[in-house]
Length: 394
Image (cartoon, rainbow, N blue to C red; front, side, top):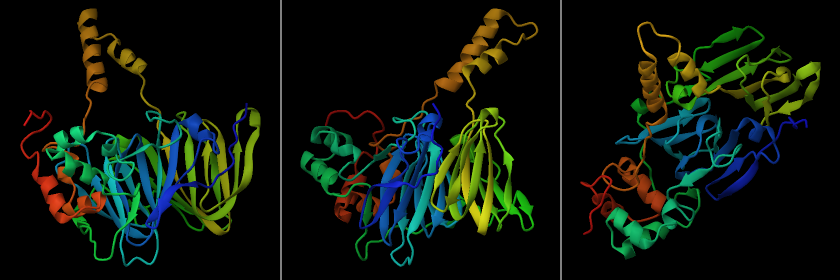
């Protein structure tokens, strides 16, 4: 049965005074589920803050509008990175990364971020699942006060209070006078690339311009496993018909402008012919050919390309290509070692103890995330300074 490829706008998932989170659903855009791709947008009002969370999917984030701060805690990092972000910035967010986002109180515009990523290892194919650390849907609201108290080395009353003082879910608006740490200029290095200012990979006068994200200009792209680019074409220009040669799907979000798109599939059948405009998203299936023509306003879009994963079969082909003077038993040992290296190197992020992600997050962020007092934050931070993973009875 043919899959509907029509472009779609997102729907609001949750939000409040501080902003809103929007997502595209596989129920409305079936290709999300088929391609195991997630797509969402975060919009923060002035003083809005997206509470610390991590996701079940690797993502690329692209700032569509505004400027603000993104806090990032990489797996096993001892300190968060405070990255200033503005329109045109792209960030690669691998598995296990903890993030929070903030729009400044003096901002005259909303801070809007697009998220595109691979959900093939997620809980719901075609949809991101975000795990909040605090708030009404925070992880520690699910643990008993006994477990929370033991983990954080707090009295059960204090543990219960700390886990329940933030009534909001996902997004909050900070109160007047409540401040978060300022971005650190050095933290932008290798973490963000501004696609509107970066060196152009393609520049055709009166035609279009392309900036491609790669490991040279944004190293974490390698860990995310997705290709991405920003394309801008001028009035009435055409983007040449093309397809992905390596069985990848192309996910395209129209940033601004409008135009027409056609997609052709097997047997020369045109499977999509429609108008596209800012805010819409569509997916081109594997090996299908796509072409776009801009209207008088020109058109700009941000895309990701799903990179095919290397299968275990290729390991076998590599390991059992006959190696001179090496026995079959030795080759089997090589294969086993390679598989162990690729498949058995998990990384854990702990939420208690001296290596906890809490220790990497700034005090001001913790206060805002828990909606608590500086005194309670200091008490919380002062605990578990020596213990790492296992906590002996008191």
